[in-house]
Length: 317
Image 1 (tube, rainbow, N blue to C red):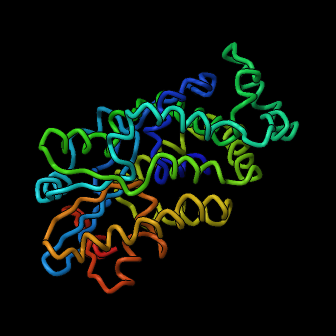
Image 2: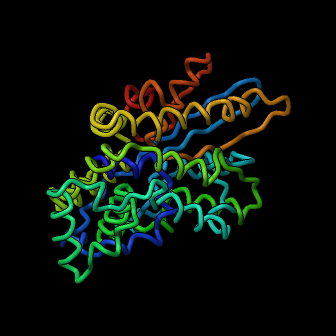
């Protein structure tokens, strides 16, 4: 599930225009009945300040509406919101240029040079099935090809970037006139992905190509685990597997970014003027010992899960 894990860590809303690069990766799949939505939502308090931590899924379906009551309360209670990226960056002209630069090679290589022959052959068969050609992908790094295919699968399942939880709350914040900000720049986010070693990029792409239909089924599972708020399963099947199978990807995309964000979240809790902030990031950033939840607890803050329909044991995770 290497590429699919990025749906919980990487703001794929940026990549929506590139989702058409792999139309052949649209297997005949149907979305299943989704479980009750138990949000991945935590609350930290300190000296009159409140920070809500909400784990987002960046691609959702119309059937995922409406938002859970807990999320609505957290939004209404907050006077400001923090996202991975400043919402204004999503429509800034320089964003497209940054994405295009990151998706290409800066060392003179091409996709055919980076991919081993068996992987290149499988990719060629998949792209050729839709009338496409590998030539169109020659200047794209494996991670970009992989995410394009993942987005194509997501679209086949009815999942859309414009319906993602972060996008919905960005729009709500604009309507309500609530201040918003980003935890990182577009350049920082795409550079993190671009720094992943070719070996791990190829490994993730090969995992997808081995069985695209299985990838679609796994994406549906991932959505359902997230919607069910199943912290234990998400942590074991997504975070831990990513750390074990692609450790450098995990370090670059999850651990290092969490470390960069933590002081900014901490500052909201220690501000001299009391405030209430809703922090919305990919769900993977809240899980495990390196996640923001446990990192705040390690700094001495009391962080409690907010989940109306969770059991007492589950709500404390």
